[in-house]
Image (cartoon, rainbow, N blue to C red):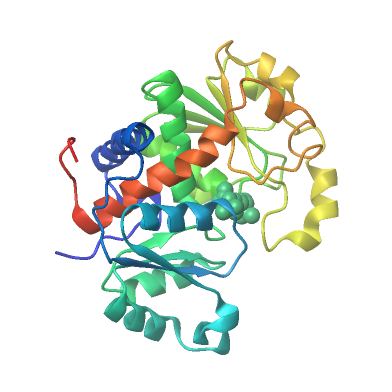
Length: 308
Ligand code: CP
Ligand code: NVA
């Protein structure tokens, strides 16, 4: 069977994604009840290539492998041959001879696809310039845990049409909810990604109108990693797009707020938003561990029985 990769949410079927969310919830509840006793991957290794910084992604993947009885290797381009120009495909082939899966955080999504094509072991996108699908597993898991099925509900993306926004668009397609994307003019998500989502996604430019009666509101930084030099211009262009408690008040009374983090208080969110009970970002961050455990287990072992 061809190796399965997870470069975007479209690499799994809606059924498989639903399975992953339920499996992540089970893995989490078993961990809380029994501690880390489930070790389905003894001595298996995950190579983790980080070309950009990370806190949550590194800690969650490394902890997932340790708790599963395996091991994670942190590889930075600074001290591997990747940073000295060894071709991506050669690196992919070499790693596949030794490790069981590879996780990559990088700039170019095309480079990630090149790597995956050359790899005989599963490759996981841990953030590229275009997508952040692992974050969406944790986000949909959190939303499901707190509010039940997300099908038919309405989520609102406020801010930059960036990698996170693209993955929210794909999530709307795959999980069957509606997404309102609300961004300043000139910062829309990629037109082809929007078009492929059809009626599941609508584009707006007025945060107040977008937030009205929503089930969930989410945002992200205005300048992503690699865009640091645009920070000042973006701060000006995104004025009026800050998510505040007052904006959440326009949503449904039981609406939730998510943010992939790191957050910039006083920029894309108000100084106090993360203290509001509607903000469930710490649970969301913690769910990276459980959701990625479900993902790694699925890619390496396939679907497992609910008792496992
Ligand atoms: N949300 C997220 O991916 O966080 P890190 O950049 O800390 O990994
Ligand atoms: N859009 C952000 C997400 C960080 C987790 C970035 O790419 O920097």
